[in-house]
Length: 283
Image (cartoon, rainbow, N blue to C red; front, side, top):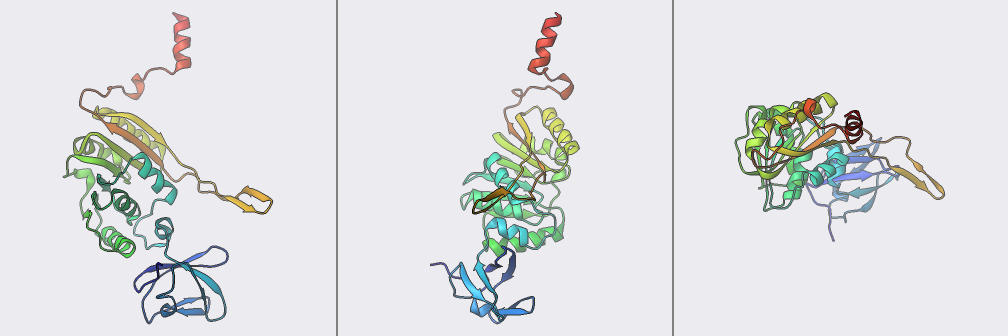
């Protein structure tokens, strides 16, 4: 049986599903709307236990999942939504034992997802140019995962270069990922995966153009992920009135040996099937 321990990050969940985060510390007291519960009343209790506050309010005490944790943890920079974190891991094909380069670290949400995916045999190298962001990220990471031995967090600007080579994956959450593309072309191993996340289409366009110019990237794709939850209560079944729609675009590519990638720019791209047929009819 897993029990709650001193130092654990815990979420208290009310009847409406609202979550309140706290870090257990013997002798401390949690307060909510005039009601209290001693941390000592939670320490030693099973994960998923029901607790009663001082005025009778009952709440569930749970260790948060990573998705729940990243939405409640302290932030230096805006975090990626859980819906995007899961898709990034799948489309970047982050696997146990992989050497993954990440920039920027931000608040550490993506870093934690990568660390869990690569496992003890893998390694994550993360560049963050801002010292305050790096400090916040490290606190968030260690609060949830404990001491980590498969992370190298460096205060460096990825726009200026990537020091490491023979990387399996490059994952970027930066405003101008196209500045990193030439460095990624050198740092990635052949067959490695490039993935970047940006919020707007103009950023996507510049990124894709940079990938094409590098002439070592193929299978370039861009997409977004939408999340719509459903409300199910008896025979009342309907989509929720609110949904997490656009949050960002993901661009994915594979690196191949030099000379194998087609050097085709947007203005030179082959016509679509319908246009090709119309051109053939004119001949």
